[in-house]
Length: 197
Image (cartoon, rainbow, N blue to C red):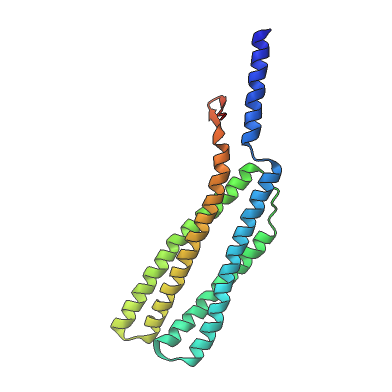
C-alpha cells in the first residue's frame, strides 16, 4: 500500500511539473500574437523603405544625370518588388490565427527564421553583384552600370541588415519558447521530467 501511494504521489508531482513546463493555451496564444505582430511590423518597415525609395528614386531619376540618375532608377525599380513582398507578406500575416498548437507555433518560427537566413545569403549575393556592376561600369565608363551597382549594394545592405535583425528578434522569441520545453526529455519509450525546487 505504501509503495502504491508513493508511486501515485510521484506521478502527481511529475504530472504537475510537466503541466508547469508547458505553456498554457493563453500563453501560447500571446506568443503567437507577439510573433505575428513582430513579423507584421517587419513588413511595414520593409514597405516604408520601399515607398520612400519609390518616391525619392522616381523624383531623383528625373532630376539628375549620369550614374546618379541610374542609381535612383534602380532604387525605384528594386523597391517595386520590395513593396509587393511587403504587401503580400503583411496581408498573409493579417490572416494568420494566433490560436495554433505548440508544434505548429515552433514550425512557424523555424520556417520564418530559415527564410530570413536564406534571404540574408541572397542579400550578400546582391551586394557582390552590385560591386561587380560598379567595378565593370568604371572599367567600361558606363554610368548605367555604376549607378545600378551602387544601388544594388545599398539595397542588398539594407535587406541584409533587415533580415538579420528580424532573424535575431524572432530567434529570441522562439528560443524563450523552446527553453520552457527543456524540462521535458524523451528517451526511447521513457519520458523524463526535470523539476527545479
